[in-house]
Length: 232
Image (cartoon, rainbow, N blue to C red; front, side, top):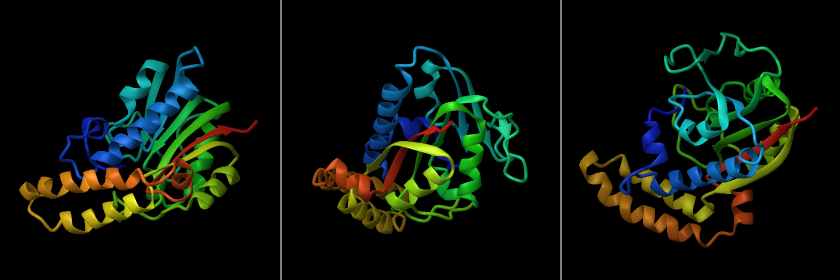
């Protein structure tokens, strides 16, 4: 399963949230992908949330789906379908129009197998919308194995049978560096004091991020957003 933050917090983080700027940028990128790739299709879609956790981004996809399946480990009672012990999804091939995967790939023991399963359940030319970390703190839930360079992420996406349409980064190098400085300090504070650190730090992260072009973020970032299409 993914992190235990509520979907509401991820979609609408309060100003004092220590992930405020990052979460808003991630939401904007997911909304941009939906607008560019889904809203123009003119049909309702079968969407699978692979590693769904509490499906924080489901409200963004619901207007475009006729069916939304949450797929996760057996210990997640909110999942529609539980992953079998060998890592296989209990679905036939070529069933889903879209697979979404938000902040999951870094947690799975075998990313190659995970992506092959996403590929298997997609229809011909179905879409994968995936986000995962470049730089980030260690955050097991229940495990945390991987961090990705832009080149490494492109490589594994293409090796598992996808055509890469876009790879976009969120939070450039200096902004992410400041996020890590904040995270190195904030968890040492009592919870009632944390907003007094996070609010000015989030402002500084916002300002630093403005010094990076999108091209620079696409090479070196806190998180990458991948849009890929299943190859025939």
